[in-house]
Image (cartoon, rainbow, N blue to C red; front, side):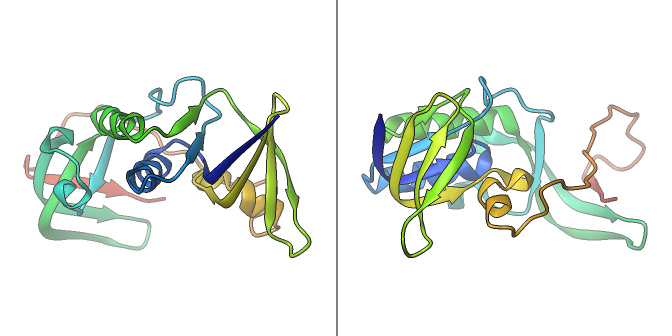
Length: 186
């Protein structure tokens, strides 16, 4: 079975959901494909952002905390930057974005993994096929899989086997002022 859309987005994280709702608002026929059975199951529940939620049509409900300082820490850099910073509750953010996706009639498929793609005679993606044999055809395909980079790997833009570390979140006693969030990289 061939499913035809204006845009197919692979990956229902923050980027994929936001793109889907923005394009859905334009009344385009959108398909959002996610490998996880439940996209709300995430490995961590907070995000840091310098962006104002209202600029993206999001409510203040997604803000878990407002901070006025951020500490950046890497093996080579260690400094504090002043400015408005938001700690975002990722679950609330996902609920809002999924609500918008539903409102704009975006077709969402979960537990769906893209297995292969085919190219047309100009080298552009023509179709993608999922683990159930469904074929998706679109004018535009968007890879919102983050470091998984499905399309990027297929085109040789990313190594087939990335050597990466996974971030972990720990609950620790907070020793700094309550108006400061810390970002540890590396």
